[in-house]
Length: 288
Length: 237
Image (cartoon, rainbow over all chains, first blue to last red; front, side):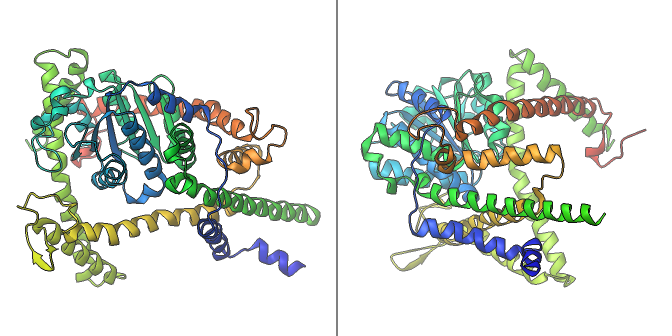
């Protein structure tokens, strides 16, 4: 008994790693899924987009890279789908170098696949990445062309009807920012949304979300924090638009099974750690 | 002179940017925007500096054969291969190797015909995702070792972490037996929301206001030339 206790007490961290690996791999392989119950925050974001009229101008900034793609891509896809269903004019850009690739992936998976009638330059445009973080936001606040003479295909912005209609952040109806750090939602609020008076909603990694909560509800309309919020949004979208209700189309909901099991495993280890801690303390007190 | 000119530039730019926030009219309004454009141009050069620094550090490690120099060699090989393929737009079209695809040197680097996009898709993307995924293992291991109810503060932290861990998954809803599963009510997910909405938000706001005040103080010291550490000079006593 004592030997087993000692083994648990001095648990090799490789055992923890093994359990976490199994907790993630098995639910993904066996498609373990749980129902989602959207929170008021996710509902608020969904309802706001739902209320916007057809043809509204929405700027989506992809400020993340492959490292956080598994967590942030589901919400990016859900937002792109929602904006396309609502026939919004979509302006796409990135403040992260690899955000441009993330954006192109989302365009391929949503617009090119499901919305073939969406015309480049008329209904959506991708102006890509520019370095400078908040400096970029500061400039496009009044004029996109000052910093973006051309889009990702090297065509002048002037040649697109979208930029004849609106050429600054001030003329957008909504900013959507999906970010995994800096520059990200904080910079978009401080240098973009607030000075332009344009409403903003954001998506971030779960780790980052607590730092962004203070901006809600006055400076951001809503925040989707991590995979859980993305799964809730997918559920709302699927309920309203049945063509997207199939779980297989919603990566957030597919991945939540693994996340739930991993959380249980982490909690189990924390409980074990605390049990050994209290047993040791009790033994020490007896000896003392 | 070496110090005076940078100090003068910092002072002028700092003052103009502050004034432009309060007087958004000519000339300050446009000057503030122009400085942002200059900043964006300078930020682009940071990539060259970054590349140069990477070369210097790893070339030095290889030259001196410090421990792990093999990794530095792999890093530099990867750097050069990616850079050359990306800049020269090497690719394959209909089984024929092409350079400068598509059309000219300014072509789209995400074009699937260019090998650069393959490097991104099949090398960089899985590696970056793997590195980030490793965090889950370290978080679990660290939680097991560090999350101990040693005192009141640690216990509060532990309880809050359990509420969030449960509340951020379906499990939280499932174990909240006192609320019917399909009905809203004071269940664990709601409790998790409360933790995020009130204690977390209040604490974060306090931290953010503190940081903002600190930034204001530091910025003023830099603009007024009191803090010169950014020039590589120790703060004057």
